Length: 358
Ligand SMILES: [Zn+2]
Image 1 (cartoon, rainbow, N blue to C red):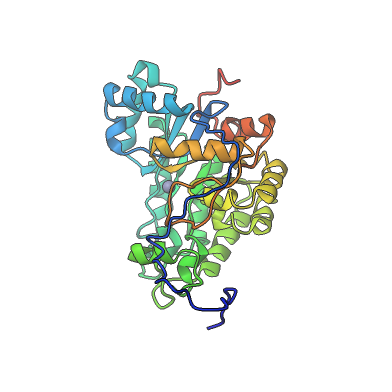
Image 2 (cartoon, protein in one colour):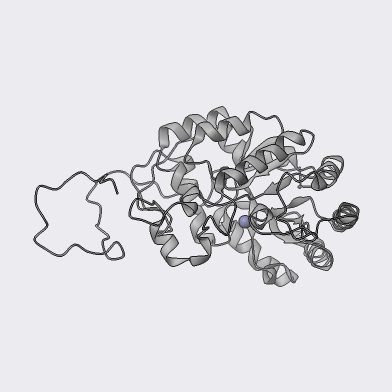
């Protein structure tokens, strides 16, 4: 294996610590601007509150309290729900009084057993879910592409033409399609000491994608991009910046397609480690980027606000196994913040509450 570390002139005299233990405190003296609440009300397009938050007026009121603390006005629930689950949650939201305009639901699509008659059934279910209150589709999970099989036993490709009638129905019903494809590219790479996600891969066996069991990262990206190009009338929101937040020129090519949007959930470590490039990217693609958080832990949102709103240097990230580096603020202008926080989501999602935004 090639040695990529700078060589030391001699071996350390003390035993080196493990990466689990080495947490040096920063001696950097610099101004800090903590941002507990977003500067403008935000829409979380990638909400994953557990079902218990959506059950009743009481639990919804508690959710509202948590959202108020971070200035998220609307949570879009991307829990891949359909049928009864959509009906029950939408009814609870409508009946909740104060929360009735603060939570919206995306409908899930069941991609199992695609074969003759599948599309008609899926579209009928989608229409029923929209009638019950769903405002978009998602989150389509990474299993589409990675593991789901067709009725004939073969792997369901993301660009399988059998899915096209459903994408067309989403365009007709004006539903944005929120889709997560693959995972960080390092999950396909050898788990060695050059892998940026070594610790995460060591912690979570299910995030390893050995080539004999799974399609490659590039195969999945190719299928996704074929599907996007073949369905230009459908609005897609590519979750997690398409796993290209570490390769913004590649993401730029995707966003140059007129029907593509993207979302920033769970990739803050890549935005915050390239403050100048990320700033320029967000300004250039300000009409295409939506805020979303992914796992619902209210105490983690302020890290996003701080990266987007400040020019702070070298501060901690919230999830040590994602990244071994610190974050920097990208200081977005107010006009861009408003688009990322809520305007772009409102623009592509007619079913979101459209009134009363700044
Ligand atoms: Zn998600």
